[in-house]
Amino acid sequence: MLRRVFPLTRGRVVGFSFLVGLAIVSLMVVLPGNGAADTASSKTITPTVILVHGAFADGSSWSGVIQRLERAGIRSVAVQNPLTSLDDDVAVTKRAIAQAPGPVVLVGHSWAGMVITQAGDDPKVKALVYVAAFAPDKGENVVAIEKRGPKGLGNPQIVKDDFNFLHLTSDSFVRDFAADIPQEQARVLSAVQGPWAEKALLQPVTYAAWETKPSWDIVTEDDHMISPLLQETMAAHIKAHTLRIKSSHVVMISHPREVTAEIMNAVAYVKTH
Image 1: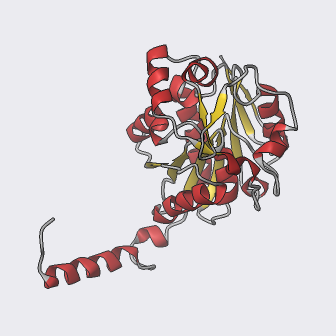
Image 2: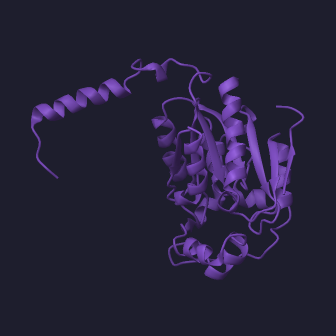
């Protein structure tokens, strides 16, 4: 079930000559002023969609979305966050932004809402899409956000290892993180989950990109990780175009068609503004 609300406002050794030639070609590709991508406006270049995963996940969680974007002719890149700190995740995301040939639509799931809020200060980023994600104010961290509203619908079992990284137990992953996908698939995702550094929860963003850039927000109404009511509050606060989906936390896996469609709405906006 989908419900939409729009905001009221805004190996071999090679010859030296070969290497020199390769270097020259590389410079021709990356130096400013070479190619239409450097001079064309966002209205003539389809934006690159950069997909940023959250905690207890990896870039493959966007597979269904990537397939659909490819079919639509939209270039996408999935970041592989180390989940070791906010700064580290932002740095990886900014590298992806730097490699994009033109404007960027930055998409973040869960914890990655923090990441895109900070990394979105890059001028190439033209729009933000929050997917069951945190949308912090400047100076806010995850702990502070969680204090804003009620806890999630479930009771996630998060354990800390000897290295101060957080993990979801397998049963909790199935029950609280990915309740609306096949259990066998959820257990595989649990086995490959990305552990999340505990210190990341305390690290605040120093910039809030949504203050100056248009935002979209997908609220997951059956979410046991981030309270749907808290998601609603954040979406309203940032004045995002809001789409509600009756889904678990992994909406991009269980509802890739709807998530892709909303991302494409942001892409279309960037192309016409």
